[in-house]
Length: 421
Image (tube, rainbow, N blue to C red; front, side, top):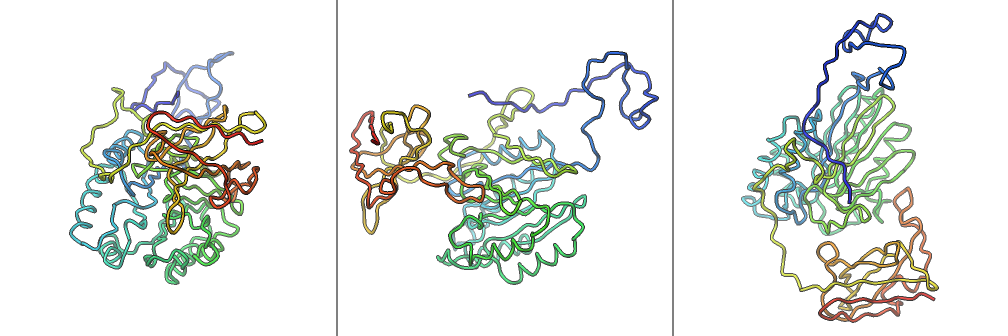
């Protein structure tokens, strides 16, 4: 696959010049000789002094892999944004041992200290899992929610772990104090030309959105120019809600099957250019950011040891409908168990109707065993508001309890045909 490389150098061109008397403002910065015909499209440089650029890093943890995040810090230095934002899950956390959590924060801080620009913290569920971790976070970084203003742009940094969950996803995520704080920040900066919001969980896309507090916060953005960034789900999605753009970022080292852009699974950071007309968002994939010697910076960052994994075997599933290959259909392998079936592997069919199934890492197949298969074809796959698109196949194929599709996986390569007639 071809990928654009971003190199860590700036080319400077010096040109013999005459003054541009007809462009007095340009004289100060650009000197160039103008003729009847000229080898350029324009002399209006894209350098408005009000424009600025920042990076947004996503989940580092949740099964983080070695070297990725620490290398990303050095890659960001190559690009020189004005500052770096985050969307949480910075340490593994999920521990009641303060010594362990303290060590993880010390390690993390050693990476962001390498940045040549400010780094702004936002907490995730791995960072604030329990009362002890919340107390430590507050001791280190003050409140887990705050705001700042830069060049008349308001930045809201929210905590979706306020208070930390206690095993109940169907509960409010914003305390009254946080909502009151954000309302005041927005009211006090009513003339801000744009509002950026950063939080860990994409609460707008949860089934419990009516009670998790997001709608209460979203009301505060009504009628504003705003953009929202989140993480948590470890795959990239873009949404449109109430005339605003919402982004769930992929990973910056967090656990991922890394199946590529078709699945929204890749390591990246978002690159945001704030212009008078609004933000321009680009996604920079980490394996395409090289220094001027074509190198990715070295790092000694360790990853989380993976648990014992069963051996997998290459599994390809071809789905046809009336003899024609069915593309963009999701095929899921389920193993029956108690109290319910467990999802083991999945894949998305390509233009040939073939899904390469993944369990642990990209296209590794599934372990030996008997499986129930479900197949869903959505068009579009997701709606602008984040909800799943309509299923074009019979509903019975989408549920384990009603699907009649079965497969037995054995050692070696497995090729399965699913004709939907």
